[in-house]
Image 1 (cartoon, helix red, strand yellow):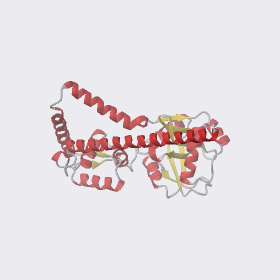
Image 2 (image 1 turned 45 degrees about the horizontal axis):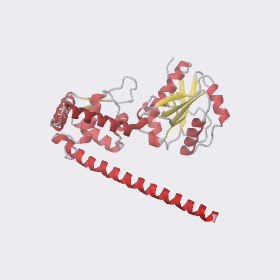
Image 3 (image 1 turned 120 degrees about the vertical axis):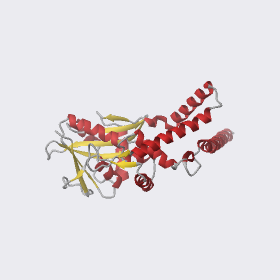
Image 4 (image 1 turned 60 degrees about the vertical axis):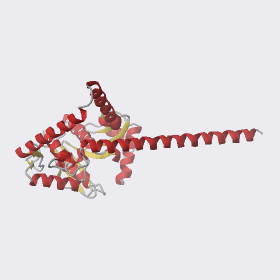
Length: 320
């Protein structure tokens, strides 16, 4: 009798779980349908469905590029690509077209002669002014029938939507460790698996590295979640030199300049320790990482270590 009661209780619990799961899935499906329906409504109202944005002279992607270059003079193509989350080939074609039309020009970088940041030409500045006027007029027309209170409600609602969608991921937090912890072990472990590292650090060696001058480990957080890391290790056989290692950002957190923030923190600390050169090794398949390093001023150099996996060796002068 007791076993029958227990079996019936377990069945009831399972039935409850199934019902709750079904209800949750139904609610999610309804919410997705509502968002999709709003998207169809709003994209039509915004005028982005036409071949030319606001029936003007540019497509939506072209207009966004012009706006971003206007808002960020001397922005690099790679930063622009990350901001707009566009495919590299598509971005290159769009930029080529805008340059050919003499709306954007490439200029010499103030800090790196190899970079060619982007700026608007005089023609481009006039085009952006027209786009801003068209967009303002269009939105003004959408708001014309609303009262001041309704406009405020709408603006607050949009701000709320943006905050919800961005979540805690809008402000990466960079932390330099004083003690090895579970977050460090977890993100380093993920890095090892992602790039198939053979020579891996053990907890004891990680703590020793943290305690060594001109060395350290930095973690990147989005909210409470660790999403990236970078290591600085003092090179004893080279004068005033350290090594950049273990730079990694989780795939879901990429496109938010987290790698740059990690490297910024690392380089600031290195300078404070009197480091003049930062070295690193990589291998040819990691093309995105190599491009990042080159953009930040790293140059190819001779092999400086015995890492069997490395095929690319680079260094950056910090001054001093």
